[in-house]
Amino acid sequence: MSPLANDPQQFLSPRFQDVRAYWYTFHREGLDNMYSKTDSARQKILVGINKLNQVNKENPSSMLIPFFFTAKGDEMMKILSSIPKAERAVYVPMLIQMDVTNVTRYNSLK
Image 1 (cartoon, one colour):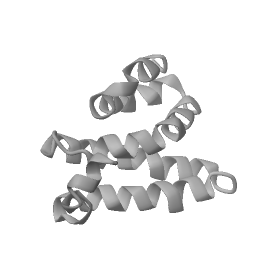
Image 2: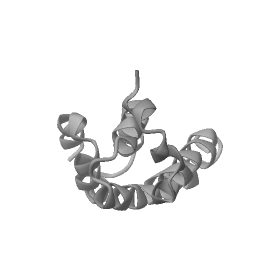
Image 3: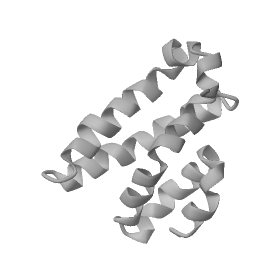
């Protein structure tokens, strides 16, 4: 059973509005447009990482952020690997803080 099943309030709480909005943006404005509008879709995904990181800092014990990266970690890696290393350097530290289970993978992007 998912840890979130024990605390469904995280899905509904106003504190996590930015996570819900990012989840939508990640899929609808990001992945769904990756073929036809690659650059703008990638930018939509990358811009939201800052907000996700802020929510993580404000709610360090939340299970919602790790849940997101369990589901979307592979896609995030592919997106980051498609941008120049200098640009990646901005996002890798934030992702390492939020997704500690994939630190090795993120470090390989440096």
